[in-house]
Each structure stands twice: as C-alpha cells, then as structure tokens.
Length: 159
Image (cartoon, rainbow, N blue to C red; front, top):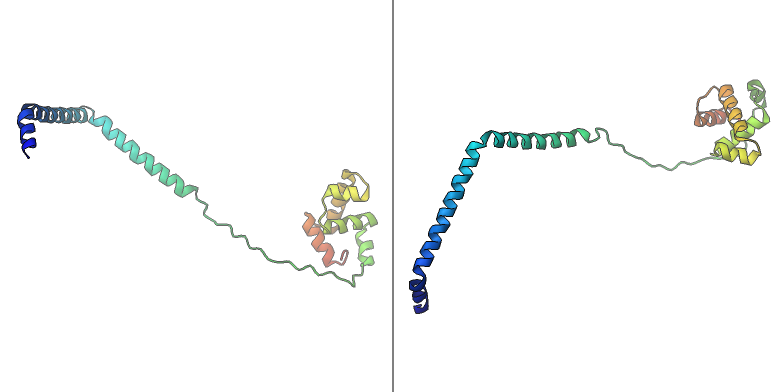
C-alpha cells in the first residue's frame, strides 16, 4: 500500500492533468458531433429515410419474388399391361387409309423412340419420318405424339 501512495504522490499532477485532457477531449468531440448533427441535420434525416426505404424495398422484393404456387411432384408407378391377344383392326386401318410404314412408325412412337431413332431403325431420312408422323397426326386427328399413341391404343391399332 505504501508503494501505491508513493506512486500517487509522485505522479499526482500528471494523472490529474491526463484526466483533465481526456475530459476536455471528450467534451470537444461531443460538441463537434452536436455541431455536425445540427449543421448537417437535413442530410442526416435524408440518409435515415434512404436507409429505411432501402430496407423496405429489399423486404418487399423478397416478399414479391417468392413463388405463390408451390409445385408438388408426385411420383407413381405405372404398370404397362401388354395385350398378348392383340388383334389389329384391319377395317379401321383401311378406313383411316394407314400405310404399313405409318403403322410401323406408330408402333415405334409408342415405344418412345425419337424421330432420329425411328429414321435409323427404318433406314429412311429424318424428313421422311416427319412426313409420316404428320400424316399420322392428320389421319388420327391429333396434335401430339402422346395423343396419337393413346388414340391408336384405344382404336386397337397398336398393342
């Protein structure tokens, strides 16, 4: 304790002077801050408003950009039944005026082959396959491959 008292007495003036300087520095910084706030109050208010509207804009953008409808993917097993006793309806084939090649292409469509794969299997050009498929669409009165396959199965044109 004697050491602390000696230290205090020896450095008393320096410590009081340092505390006084620190207090004055704090007072000057506080006055400077008040001066800055008063002289630039308009800019500070504008800055606060800008920050508030920026945060509001970000929040609103995040709310509006969320999808309103969630897509739910349901997977189910599909059982394909093969008709072992399939009999081609030849009267309907002649009524629709389907050629052997068109029936062949219809069967390959039902198996899920692409136009290019069908062309390679039948050794014909791609444009020939497209022409046959277009003719099939017209004769079956459909617009898509899946519709053509479904209708052909319903009419007993393919197994």
